[in-house]
Length: 380
Image 1 (cartoon, helix red, strand yellow):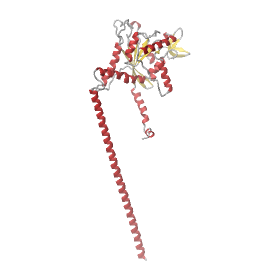
Image 2 (image 1 turned 60 degrees about the vertical axis):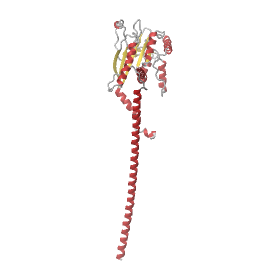
Image 3 (image 1 turned 60 degrees about the horizontal axis):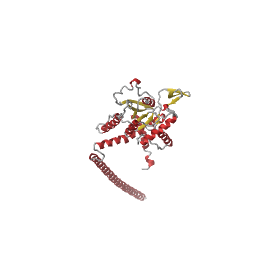
């Protein structure tokens, strides 16, 4: 069938159908914030979504679990709606991380949590009943770095190595308003060099796009990593307009001013431009890597007897399906040929009857003419 004819049957409406389905179902998005206490993680989350998602910890209780030396996993859920589209947001915080003199293995509870979510999802996929599913796989981990102006600390390097292979990792320089722009630029270069030297896997968003404007925007976002952020839930007045920012004696640090920090670029990356890519890469890259490692550790792989038998069964079913399709097609073709022959016989019979009828009409007309001639001759 020509392409022009196919385009008129409604195929082009498929994106609209997909849009309606996604709009009705909404989306799940899970963010993990990781870093030492006092770096503004709670303020950042509340600023990012312009609502109070996380309550602030009282300063006198911030270090109350120092003696227990445990890293907690706090899960906060919220549902955010914008223009009729719902996002079921999950924010995972890790209070207690990096707050001790000896922080050896403090990342273990975080890594175990990430692996546990993949394991739970994998176990759920193997169940017979899979309707209800609580998917807590982390789509992005925001790792907050102290703005020291030097480079990454050994703890940062080790933690980012452990996380980079398990989750989409985005490094963030916290409290960018506490460091001068020149020192911030130097600090960014040092962090990039350290990430490259230690082969730390960080999230790299796709840059190329069919739209040149989107390509330039993606390049601008990628060049800003690690992102420097300023967070604030308070409004300040700048040139007669209220904006999010912090008021200091020396001036105002604006949250969404790209000359002051990269908060706007980071928000665009997380929400407006690459949220879908974060979700898909978690499913197709990190979860699949975990699944392969888990199956290999259990002595299974895609080439084990069970998988070969399954593939063989699937191949056999496909062959049988193809054979049935061919038989059905052949039967339809034979029936069509038989119908055409029957139709031709009917047409031939109709033509013969029409000819016979026409001959009879001619014979009747001839007889009528002869009868008229006899009648006229007798009268004479």
